[in-house]
Image 1: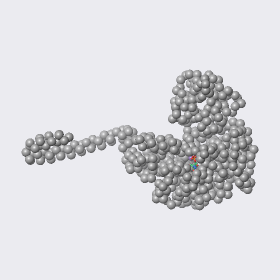
Image 2: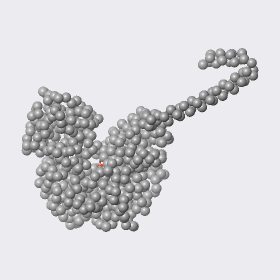
Image 3: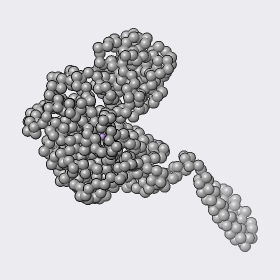
Image 4: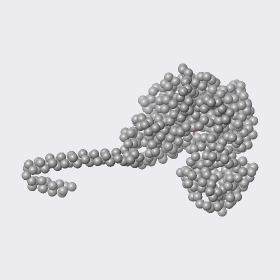
Amino acid sequence: MGSGNKRWYKWAGAMGGTTHRYFCYGLLCASLVWALLLLLFLQLSVDRLPAGTGLHRRLEHMSIHDNSLVLSPVRKPAIQWNTHSVEKEKLAGAGQLSSELGMIYSVDDQDVRDFGYQRHAFNLLISNRLGVLRPIPDTRHPRCADKEYPSPLPQTSVVICFYNEAQSTLLRTVHTLLARTPAPLLHEILLVDDASNLDELQGELERYVRDKLPSKVQLVRNEKREGLIRGRVAGAVKATGEVLVFLDSHCEVNQHWLEPLLSRIQEHPSSAVCPIIDIINPDTFSYSASPLVRGGFNWGLHFRWDAVPPELLSSPNAEIEPIRSPTMAGGLFAMRRDYFNQLGKYDQGMDIWGGENLEISFRIWMCGGLLEIIPCSRVGHVFRRRRPYGSPGGHDTTARNSLRLAHVWLDKYKENFFLLRPELRNADFGNVSERTALRHRLGCKTFAWYLQNVYPEMDIAGHGPPPRLAVGKISHKAKVVQRGRIRHLAIGSCLAALGHPSDKGGRVTLRKCSLEDANQVWLYNEDGELILASLLCLDASENRPNERPRLMKCHGSGGSQQWALGKYNRLYHAALGQCLAAVRAADQDDHITMAICDRSVSQQWQMEE
Ligand code: UDP
Ligand code: MN
């Protein structure tokens, strides 16, 4: 550049002084005109890009989110969320998420996404970008909007216990509560931190709650990890509202979610009521309606969703009236605080997670209460495909908690549980004498009464599933299309659990086919789920091609648990695009794996009665 300049001066200096001045003005004007033209051209070309072109969307994206999400280091999410983006989404239609919300623009984005799946088992990048409040579709039955609720209704304390929840999902839970609950009904929100160690939940969260949220939102911290059961009790003990609502820390409440719950509680003070739990997809955060289903359980003492028996759906208002439910899913329900206390809160000998939902359900029904689902109340919940945390010491707290509830509430029917879990027959479950004393003090009915009156659909003998019920989340609507063993045609053996069929995460293997072995009985339903022993679903994660499938809790949303029994006797897994294969190894056990579909004998299966 230097030598070029010198040359230019030389040439200009050769001209006269005036000429020189005019020449400079001219050049200046020409440059200005050029600059203007260039700007105009750039603007036009951006505008002309079709919507959806990467560049256009990206520019738009940045201006929407301005100085907040996209440009900030997203691992420290949230705090200055720009709720303006909500308005933008509103125009696009509630619930219709931009397909590029999950787009990775930088190494930072990739980091956030990876970290999120690892720590939270959901797409943290999208969660962070959604902001604290976004429009979601009003999923209620249209006639719910016409319902009128009495006034006054009791004031509510919402208790949200969390352990290492992502800040964005936690704060969205809080902000949806503040935005979609009539202020006079919302007495307080108690955030109970179960000794989380995630950075973003320490000082930053404390400051946010103090500076950005109304004083009715309070943060309390457990000194040590207690688990959700004692954590919720800690919140309930602090609460001062008339009604308690328990929510998971990754929810979004929907329009008028609280009024129908409270009005039912007002009519019937000794009841626990649950909203319909809508589905927030963990990969996309899209919000979708759940159909009306009710809670059941199986003899492995796992919760499951059941179809509502048709006789309960016969009245014209059935879809907007309370539905009695044998059990609750656990995360989301409301009851009067005095009733919760009088009924014995929770079994505080239960640790971390699991079993408490069945325990409180049995206790409610057997001790004179009512447990219902209120269809006009809707709350979304992020259904993750795995629980992202363990328990201290790596104990199976669900097994121990289930044992406690079996010993206190199941009477002789605990034998059905032990039939499925013989290894637990002599396992330690601590001391339950306080809980049995509670049962006597409250004058509770027997489990036989419960089965007969509340859950007559249950298979009492403990053999196989009850006839018209399907198993697993959402599979309520999925009819069983086939039931039987799955025989490997070439090897002649049948697909069975490698360990116990109720072991989550367990592998499958081939065993000598036997009609007596319940561990070889599979249900195949119209959602494509393969459910072993009515307990768990055969699952092959979309992210792990060529790997061995596992038995996992049925999640009911297809994908990793969707199989097609089809052409060439193959068991095809659409999400992976691979087939189930048995690999015969001379020196090792046979094993079952996912493999690129071919027509080889290793991939040929037959489902038989
Ligand atoms: N939770 C807790 N302490 C624990 C385990 C869970 O406070 O040790 C909280 C968790 O953050 C969530 C609620 O309890 O808000 C229910 O747990 P989770 O959502 O993992 O259960 P899921 O919905 O998977 O059944
Ligand atoms: Mn949850």
